[in-house]
Length: 565
Image 1 (cartoon, helix red, strand yellow):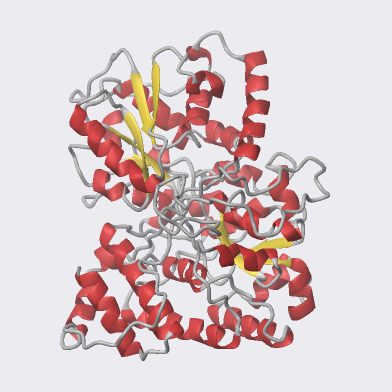
Image 2 (tube, helix red, strand yellow):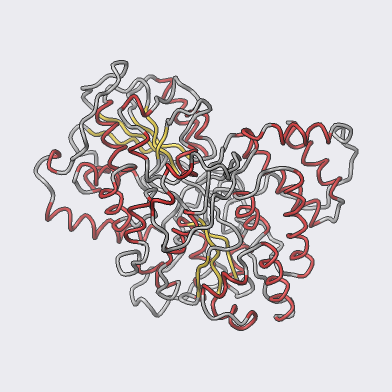
């Protein structure tokens, strides 16, 4: 059959498209409706689109690949040296510090990332955005729209309290229509609605005076093509949204994006942004070109009942103490496999482990070898599932109780994790895991040919800078926003966030855990080269070093071949 999102051929029993990541079918067993909350929606929904950050592996291997002699064998050392020397191009970030849930937000503001003599200038990379199920989103929208309909302001001026600034003279103002474009309607209508003080339905129906929301209705990976066509057509465009994996294509092109400083948005406006989010919106010359309202920190979600049975832990804090390092994580995985007779794996996939590891370790063949040996220990004993991410087996193992834990981020709670946890709803806990990491996100950028520079500035300010606006959005959407002060104020709350997600974690204040993760992340770069190199390395490790038992040098041959293209 064909995928309903991208049109590519997929297996008849597939639940995820390996080409675009779309979720296309229900689990093989019926999803059980959790008893609490009484009206919690059933996840996943057949129409729920999932656009994974890491995506499927670069290639799908159905048979053992033939060994071959690589022309890169002789220059492997030279290539590895170039990889290390090109730190800005292939680096993946470093950890500034491990945060504590009680730390002051001032310790994670933008100013804290600049001048420490102990910081190393390395980078991190990852892609995607968070996802929500349509049932949850519709319910949330309905509640918000009902409230807004009763108290909707008479004029926009009553809700728009953005400080006045001088706009650069090179930018035009006073245009008739403010045009905002994105590949879907997951966030834009809600952001515009909060900015203008109207209902989301008015935004999506096109009845907000002076606002034109262009929804391409495609997957994130297809959005770049749509933008290119839009630019070539010369049609009106003021602000558009970019995903992490291809954002640099536009952020590093002065003909496609304008420095936010020209809109009067400066460092002080982003003082509460997390460094890892702010750095993706910065071009190669250090100009801030994009801003994001979300931060997508990651964590390790685990089955509390299985953890008690096989590891003897009774709380997220105990679990975190056990797996706070990669050595500890691997040891726990070996223990789980041994105690369960090989029937339960601690980790969901090598890809999930790689997402966490590569965010906090400088990318090199040496660091990759360290990771590969961690993964091999778990692979050989059954401590990590051997299926790929975004395959039907990946979430089925969680549903069947064969996987104890998943590496997750905020958008996963209503996506793949909701599927994997649906048969054990309410029996999950969340801890930071071996290292801080994040997974995906979306950035707002401004077309240099905008004729509404003032509106562009106001829209970005309310969405990505204002503590009050962002705290309100975090609670109403809900969302883990890119503002350390706003999230510090509400991180310990449970009643005001999504009850389905909170109850799945047994009422745990999961945003406090995510706050600790976000606080422990530093600067990184996410160039297209970094994305392809990391993907090629994961492929070489998983398919060659682990699945087919090739030597490390042989696995590197395939890695070098892959990146040479």
